[in-house]
Figure 1 (cartoon, helix red, strand yellow):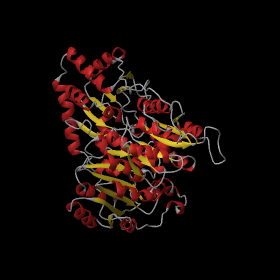
Figure 2 (cartoon, helix red, strand yellow):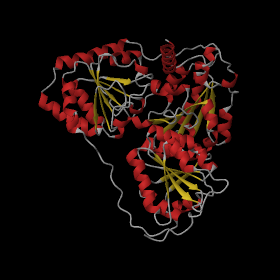
Figure 3 (cartoon, rainbow, N blue to C red):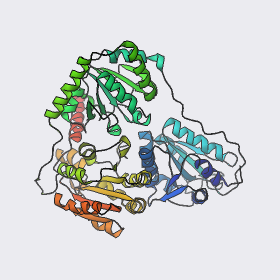
Figure 4 (cartoon, one colour):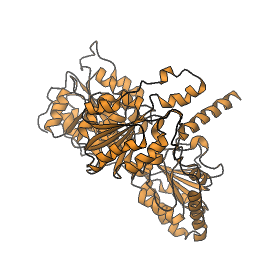
Length: 557
């Protein structure tokens, strides 16, 4: 290898895995950023260190390609911790390149960064003079293999020193594991004998590229299909019921509850997906295929650890050997679903009038769904509003819904996530950020970053002048609402000052300003400051509150 500094070696190895870096420059990473620029890495600056990893996280969710975030040591590093925890919880491979204490010993301003990362579940790989390249490669391979966040730490006194020569092995391809003999034959028999089969796909199925095989399997069985919020429309077609969980319709949930055999493909069956235990019927047989080593939910009856795409292909071949299912049986199940979905209630359309005269978020979401460009990738911050997009907007592909913060139940990462997604979306596609006013204020410094990064972006702020989830959960119990309220901010004025086009949306007619911007080419960033009521509680939150109440009653009883 050519002569490079330690920081240069780290950048050189990373350049064989990724092309994009997000972050804030400081003493601890300035040499890394200098080397990265010389190597052709694209650096997208953010204005708060907390945005560095959140942007890299959303870049991966949108594109499937690895990205890095970078900060300086100390306060720069600790500012990034919430986003680092989110990436760990969400199982997103991402790399944080950061400065660290000198190898000679900590200074008064240093903290034990490795211990902090370990507390979040992230491994730290501290580079050395002689092994900066191999340690960097080890860190990246770990992130990709384990689907997690890692920290690459560059000790301050080594950053600009010349690195030792190394011969690095070629990057290893991810291994695909199949437990073919460990249960797929039984799975095939169970599915072949099902009268009302259901295939529920999750993000793992999307990442495995298993959509075509699962869709073929569903058609072969006459199965109904559904997806988690992170696998929206992966199995869209005949028999598709939409989202499983609190974002779905009650009609679809009723059909899922009547399935006799449920194949869960690459989904963890979170409490939200399972509607807190109420999604599947008590007598249904639940099969889970996942790369995890053991079942992720107690309802699972048969578990197979395998790559979902490969496993689905094996099951299709096994079904060929079992003969064709009874066509009248499977056709009847789909026909019944079509009839009930057509006749049953869809999502509430919202109201024209509200107690406080502000917009009903359901009516607003419906109207926005019709106005927003069809080629859209949606990024969502955390908050009470998170259901409106997957419930009321068409989300073309699983990678077009990026929910940053939900795994860790954080708010404030949406703007940062939008920066990463903006760098990843294809030309001609509009990025849409949905955020609440509370989370938007937390990340406000990176509105400027988004305006600089996005070719075409719409920011929808559900502005209820409050922390809406807390209003519904605790204000409804009689707790004081004073800490839950936010003075109403003119986000439109702020956005214009930073270079975006914007409008305050007080009525659906005001969306004409957004429509005019889209008709003019949808170039740059448009911020829609939507003044919504806090009187409408999202159905998913009502389910959550009821589940908490039932759990509390069970303990008390």
